[in-house]
Image (cartoon, rainbow, N blue to C red; front, side, top):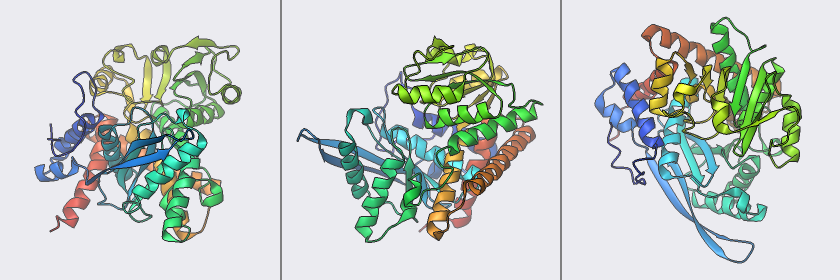
Length: 429
C-alpha cells in the first residue's frame, strides 16, 4: 500500500473498512496498469490540503455547541477543486479524504476541468432546527472563506444538504466579498443562479450508464427488472427515470426498510406516498415490506446501491443475484466484494462513472454562472447525455482492450489523465 502516514487522519479500528485505504488501493491498481512513476503515485495518493475548522453555533435553547467542519482538497492539477458538503453523523476526515480523491478521478474521467474536494460536518441534520442549520452552514462557510471561491473550490450539496444550504453558502460568501457570486457553489436554487436539471442529474446519469450497459448486452431498459437501495435525491430520481423508460423497478428502500412488488412498483405513487409519510415507505399498498439486506439479494437485471458506502461486502457478495451492479452511491462495494463480483461475472458500473451525472451538471451550472447565461433543461440534459455516453464508451473500450473490469478501466482513464497533466506541468519549485 502507498503510505498514508503524512495525513493527520483518524486511525480506523481493524474491523472497520476504511474508505481512504480502499481509495488508495484502487489508485495503486490503476498505477500498476499504467506503469506510473512511483513519485507521481506518491503525490496523487495524498490530498494537497486538509482543513478542519471549529464551528461554534448557538442553539435555539441558548446553549453553544462547537462542531468540527472538514474540507479536503485533493488535487487541482486540472482546475479548481469541486465536491460536495456532507452533513451526516458518520462523517470522518478519512471518509472525506477518500471522497475527495474519488472526485478527482471522476472529473478527469468525464473530461471536466476540476480537481476533487469534499467537505462535511459530523451531525444528524434532523436533530437541528432550520435556524440552527442555517447558523451552522453560514459559520462553516465563513471559516472556509479563504479556501473556497469560483476559481478555487466550488462546494455542492451532498448527503444531508440540499439547494437550501447552497443558497446560504452562496449568500455568506457573497456578503463577505460585497457582490453576488453565483459561481461559488453549485446545486443551488434556480432563483439564485442554479441550473435546470440539476436535481435529477445524478439519477439521470445513473440511468444513462445502466441503459448503455444493457444495450451492450443486447437488452433495453424496457422490461428490465431493477432494485434500488436508497430512495433519496439519487435513488428516487433514478427510480423515476427508469420507471418512465419502461423498466420494472421491483424494489426500493430507505434506511428504515423498503418495499417489493414482483411486477414492478408504481414509482410516482411511491414518491408521493413517501413525501406524505416523512420519507417512510412502510404501508405502501400492493407491496411487500423488505429490509435493505433483502433488497440487495433479489434476483434482478440491475441492482443500484444508492445509499451509503460499504453495503456490498464479502459477507453478502456471493448472494447478489443481479447481472449488473450500478454504483449510484460512493463506495458501496468493498474491495473484497468487488473481487467476488468480478469472479462471479457480475458487471459493476463503478461509482466514478455511474454517479457522475451530478458533477457534470454542477460543471454546467458553474459555466452558466460564470457567463451569466442560463440554459433550458433540454440543453442541460443533452450536454449531460453526451458526456455520460462518451465516458461510458471510453471505459467500455478500455475494458475490452486491456481485458480488465470496468472499474479498472475507469480508474486507468481518470488517474492516467491526472498523472499526465501533473507530469506535463511539472513539480514546483
